[in-house]
Length: 384
Image 1 (cartoon, rainbow, N blue to C red):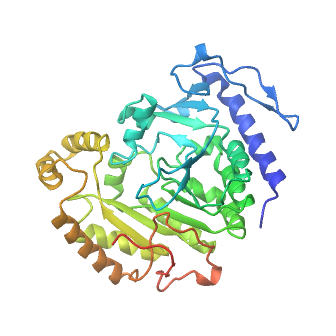
Image 2: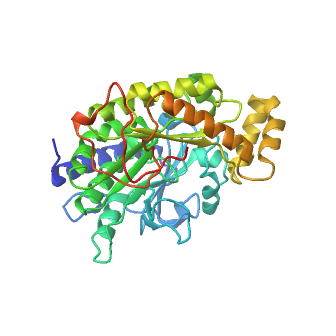
Image 3: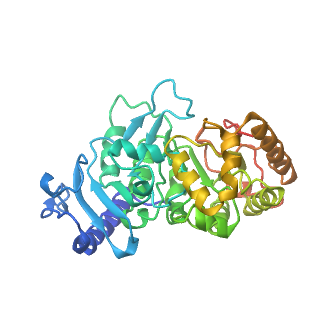
């Protein structure tokens, strides 16, 4: 069942206004009196620059609340949200939208940590606890997509920080973003660890009747205790497996990004067997998998965590990675072989995983596979 644009937009605006009222008492920098919108409603106006805690462009206010203990949200109005990937990049997409900067998922291994330093935050604790929210993302995106110059290229979401991190439950930016993309005829892909995606399944099903849609879940381990330590702000592996099943039951394709596989922590045959068995049972349409890589910013934070939690592995990691980002060729070749083995065991050989490479039309309910969940999805190539 589809949602009318006006009805969906009214619901989202009503929700956001109620949430702004509830959060006003938590504001660390005040918001001006609401200003009238074109439809007769109201929206918060930017606070004066002197109220800003940080020199963030377009800062409206900064909010801290017990509901998100230890996290501060910096609400900003963005001038643009549609980002062009620099030419020459090896990324499998050209355009991105990131409604959030920073991520309360707090994954120790997150490759995007260094990007927070561009905002004069640090790549460690600040990345986890200082979250920038582009509160006008959907409205700005709709205007950008309406320009005659827009070429309706695929837009990737979840390329830097997770669009369905916990804050999305409060800000509800994604419904407007999805609607703007679909209404403009723009194909899109979403990668997330967030089970909040389930809220938008009806909207995603409707969008998939308008444009190609590619959905991916990030899940690389089933060990609940380890996940709670290394990705403490994420829904549990069990919850993400249930989300995959829900997407497949809804007739939506769902690839899996099983990255990063962590040397000596999640690369054993037991760990890989558990992972691929769980993904097969949930009905994943394919799996892309690969080893941890340690970019500057991520490397320091991850190695500090490793020294605290698994000190005996620190020397092994230093030998395995040397001074580079990637594990040794020998290790990657070995891991590729083990991944290929388990893909074959659970019916994923020949299927495509997830890499934002190619948005596709939604699978029909008849395509939901139970006995053999691996479905060949053209246009994507698994890493292994």
